[in-house]
Image 1 (cartoon, chains in turn green, orange):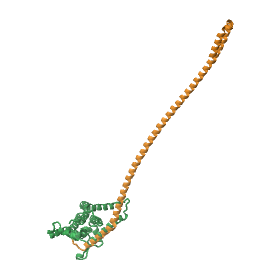
Image 2 (image 1 turned 180 degrees about the vertical axis):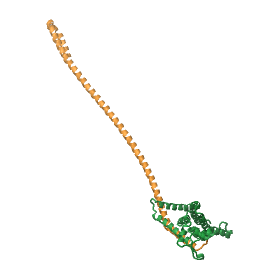
Image 3 (image 1 turned 90 degrees about the horizontal axis):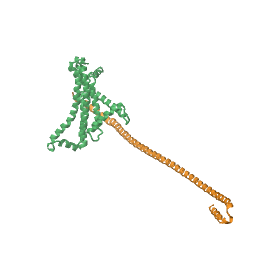
Image 4 (image 1 turned 60 degrees about the vertical axis):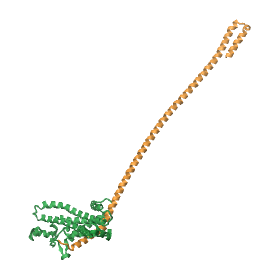
Length: 259
Length: 160
């Protein structure tokens, strides 16, 4: 694969090839098929594994698989309970979904960079980018959903008037209303943008480094790719964890009355 | 890198995942976890209770043992006293019997001695009289000594 890419434009060609999604459609209505495909597959895997655990769940002695799933669930539940003290049917399952789904999507990073694209090219697909979280669409889809939930819960808990007051009167009181609104809008909009960009940036950079390592002669590739992969296990988990915790924190803030 | 319709697709996927997790994954898992937590707590409480009960039972057994030991000691003490009493009583009875027998024997002896004395006295007076008669028949005039003889005879008779 690497030699083909070199033929088609050297190292730059190889990198660009690897970072170009398999897409269909024009303009805004372009669909990144690889992103959609892998994220749906990984989401399905998440549901399958956890549904199995949920079906098996009894109050009896858990097996190893059951124990593992329940440990994750309890971990997420602890995170939620640490910051969020109200009752919400949504936040904990949302946090679990984010944690596992993001983790799975990030974990695609650890598959050798050329493996799946090679399989894809054998099946006639010209481009393939296997890590969905290196697609801004995937990360912003999550952060925007979280943003919508923040707005929804802010209005639901505080009421339209309460939410408007918070937007207009804090932090500087009624005399600086437009300035307050500007600050607040920036504050709120910064949440989804930072969430989405953080995850995207980390994974995009990580994937890029894997691609760069793949460009090196095969004799020194393992020397670099193995430490980077090991380090990346940390990044993968950490980014999934950060996304989850920040979501919990933002939603907790939406539930609390600051006005 | 561009934002496009993939975003919408991803949001739909995400929403479906959240919906499914919220309805079919989180509740049964949490229910099972809470039930297990309760079960374990109950089990621990039951174990604690059993431990307490065991301690109580042990205490009771110890008390009963001490009680029994005390009772046994009392019974032994009583038996010892009773046996001592019986021995003492037997000793007393024997002593009394011995005394009685001795007394009877003493009385018998006294009586027999008296009897013998009586017989002896009668014999002696008779012999004395006959001896005196023999002596007097040769020397005294009956008429002369009648009075003295009568007197002696009277004395012997009263003595006998």
